[in-house]
Image (cartoon, rainbow over all chains, first blue to last red; front, side, top):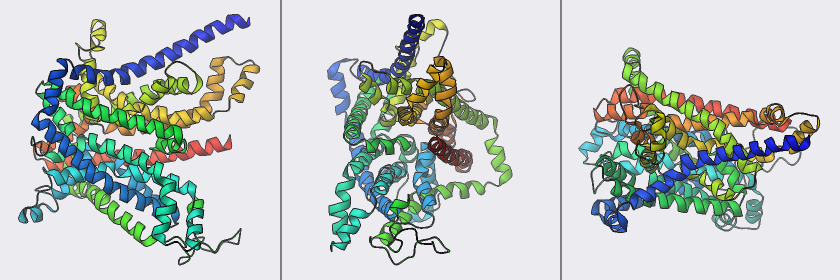
Length: 280
Length: 296
């Protein structure tokens, strides 16, 4: 009797496993694989040529520049926000946390649109900016602003729950022993949150370098000037230059792989980080 | 959350003052004014002010014109496609995401850790890369497209392509939300049910499902809210045929390119309102799930 029951049970288990893995392979693993296959479809020579194209290099430079400005800005913001929210009680705290989360709920295209409404030629500050010869939309500052909006929550979201569980005891001890506020932050808080900080920065950076929709709205798509790497991919793809598009895509895919590897290693060493990530 | 509070004058369960708020001026940890001030300034300038621009600018249209814009057939079709396919994709992931989360937490098999890690790929892979990769894969000549072609199924350049792209981006939300809860499930309860003669199916329906379904719903809602506004991974595979496979974010983009800012903003406001409503719904769901788990 028991045996007769066990056989279909085993079968069911393998069928379930098979379905799960098939779905994962078809939807996630193969898209990753095809990026590299298509990039190398015409040999390594064409791949390298595509990457060394001056427009591709300019796009990579702009993507790196954007991340180099946006990530530190949102890093400082994330620390300040987590400090205020985790270490103190005040009215409206939940509203503030919701406001920090808002960018995650907004469609990328709308994230770009709202900056056009502010700084575009017909925007709130448009006439003033034009009169002073400042260009934000269809220029690099717009790309940086839209990317800042999109990636704003990453570091803060990682740090807030982490600092809330750590509490204030260690800081209070340091302060009562005569440490200054800055010393307390640098020598007590920072070492406690450094892995969470790294985790948040990793995710923030990956999104900053890969953002497409928001940047697409504000960029103006000028080759060599306001094209980030994701926008460069779109242009090449629309021109049927598949090797070029997938070569550029392979750079971003490698960035994603490195990010995932670092994230997995961090989670393995510090399981408490994983809980915070599940919420994001 | 109260362990984050720092105000000294409350040792032990003293009778709380009428206003249960901690007294000011007794903070030991410094930097409250500086960090909160900076946070408020930054959030206001980067998030709140630009978002309010969308609402103010769309109000300039007047209610009648606003209604005309968002109920125009092509706009309505795009909204229906975005919301409908996001719902379908999130629902499909509710089933497959559950099976994957179950397999990863309950079974041991080769490369389990690799499969577990790869779930995060849609989080990490830029949407434009996902878009061209899915298109290459599901196009009629692609690896998967040519398998589906003889069956009469066309994915790329149809609404089905939109669903595939949205299923890709929303998958990790379902799996990552479910995993910790499935891991925490009390397996003694399932054994007890089986000892009492329940079949595996009955155990699943009456023991497992009731304790995880708020979480499952939360994961599906999170996936839906991500999918509904998605742009980059969709526009390559969708074909973008007006009235057929044109998503709402692309509609906004098209209006912008034609310098119809007010109209673009009107569509954006509809989507923003839906997103905010979803956000509050998800918060309520999460609270419900937590409370339910505590009771058990």
